[in-house]
Amino acid sequence: MRRRSVLAAATIALSGGFGGCLAGPETGGSETSDPDTTDPETGTSTASGTSTASGTPDDQPDPDTYDRCPRLVIGIGELPEPARREVETALAEGAYETDGELVLPHVLDPEASYLEAGGGNDDAYYRATIDDRNSTTRLTLAEATPSMGPHPLSVENRFDESVSVDVQVTYRPTDEVVLEASRSISPDEQPTLGEFDRRLGEYRATVEAGSVSGPITWREEEHRDPLATVVVGPEGVRPEPQAVAELVSCTDFWGQ
Image (tube, rainbow, N blue to C red; front, side, top):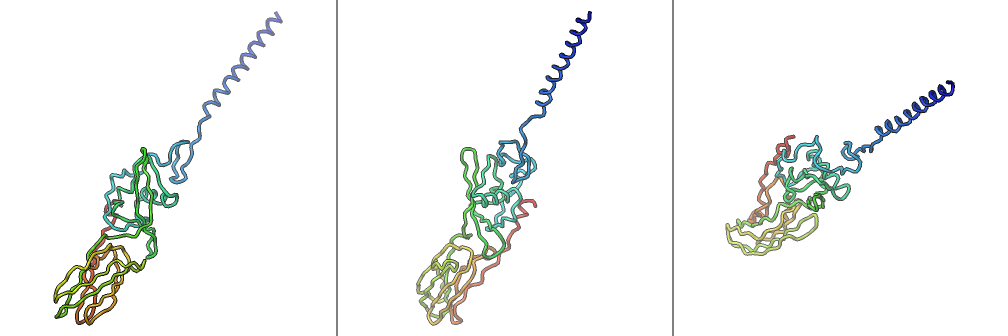
């Protein structure tokens, strides 16, 4: 009787011991998982191994909610936050890639608008290039001088007689001669001497017309129409005033 009591007690003790060992791994298994990581760029939590530029974040507005701003030059700091993040990443790392949809081409036309790094006269300007490769969209930026495209330049003769006019136009930032022309112009005639690409910046024209001559300077700016006419006459040489254009606000197109 004593032997049977000892064996029964031993059996109960062993059974309880094994029950404890089995419970340990079961509990530990429920606590083990792949840790999440935090995207250093956006500050959002992403699963380990997931692209930080995958799809559209839940808290980001749908790109289709924006309209394209028609401005020639748009400051990077003015962009909506999602588009600004794309541009700043492309500048810092050489490119921005996503397997989702870029926001930037929804807020501006990459083939018509330029991006400005800051508000000073010497700040850099950039042109955006977007490529689609194997389901990945890639944004890169290259420095470029904003241009309003080619526009003609004419000379108006206000003398009472025909004069021979010689004109040379130089783009001051690079000292590039962009137009050279010579022509005899009748009284009150206003012929076109040629056209050239109107990059933003300062220009200098040397004009000789009969008994008058002189240099004139002007700036091509987004808020002014391109210089169209130079006037020569007894009073000398002068540029025709450029009309001032009212610039639209991009925030009106972005709903900011």
